[in-house]
Amino acid sequence: MMSSFMQPQYLWAIVGILLLLAELGIPGLIIFFFGLGALLTSVVLFVVPLGLNQQLVLFLVSSLLMLVGLRRWLKNVFTGFIANKQNLEVNADGDFTGKIVVVLEAIAPGRDGKVELNGTDWRAASDESLAPGERVTVTRQDNLTLFVKGQA
Image (cartoon, rainbow, N blue to C red; front, side, top):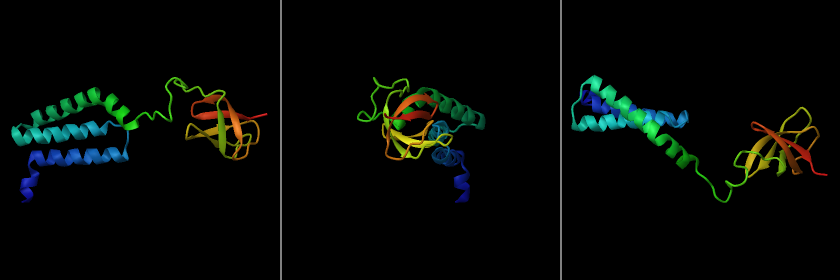
């Protein structure tokens, strides 16, 4: 019984499943396609016997073709677009200057806090002390940090 699981089609299936599971721990949607390539190789081996070199070529070619052809589309499917939360016309370039946000975690000079913008928590910095619950204005953005000031 153990020898039946040592056949190449079963080994490729096991490798494929392990790679798909690895994608859960190492996100990035790359390992996923190698898992699919291993599963495809397994399916082909159930139908057509192939040598080791042919198996490796099938695995690599199918994995890379799926990676190049499907990654962008699948990444959009997995990340999605929420129509009631996001507006492509507004902030398409990530510029949030002038937006009003709410302080979630206290901000002080030299100590970052958090604010909420469009339903997402952002790191925030300010030259003044701001308490949770205060409404503040975004003055600029530097990568993932919003610089804010209190409203007068």
